[in-house]
Image (cartoon, rainbow, N blue to C red; front, side):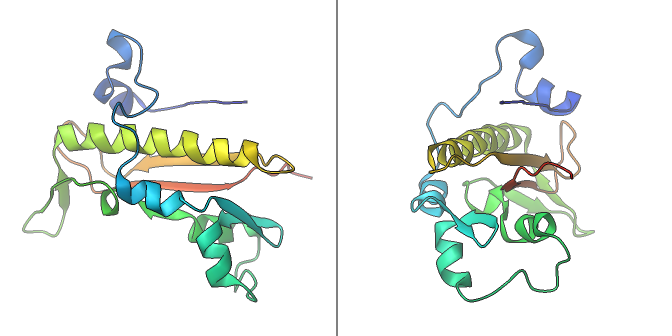
Length: 158
């Protein structure tokens, strides 16, 4: 099941209220995001991570984390502005600011990446149910501190 949920600020930024929302970035993923996911996703024990991370983490467990969901969130969390060419201005008080057009680009890239990672999960054998979350820090029409994507395996509460 695909569910997309966004707050009013994100919906307005993507013009959801004035027409169909862009489900994916028109130009596709940036080269850096394509590189990030080029080798797909893989199981790391009972968790799901990017395949490159699985190779890097081989022989390790979930560290000091009590549950796999928290561990997956820490391993599979990315600041989108590290992979998408946008300008990040730092104010005198240390607050980062991203222009509205760049926020729109980050949101579109985040949605595109989320759909791509979910597709990788559905293509796995057996298929994996993946939950992707694209979140923004302080997002107004003029400021955002960051946009983050994280993904984890969907688990039913027992």
